[in-house]
Image (cartoon, rainbow, N blue to C red; front, side, top):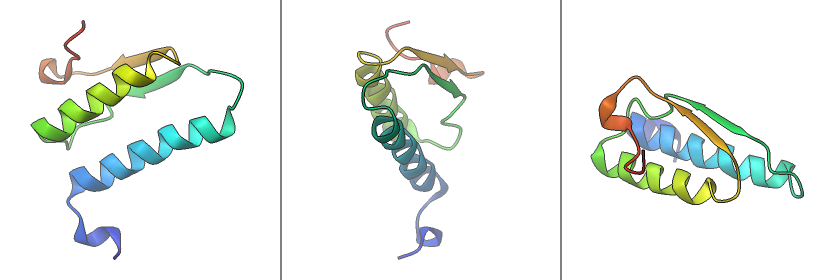
Length: 78
């Protein structure tokens, strides 16, 4: 199926996961800084919670700069 059958949030989630996977493929030995500029504007609470958990796991390997304008999008650890 094409992405037109998915909600905007699911499409954004798939793109986000694909970008993180691409970093792993392109940088096997290096650990680049990952910059995220308000990456989850269309996520519902569940998707946001899962995405922030994924960022937390990824932050154990890479330095992550995470920018957001929404207090509700702030990770719990901060």
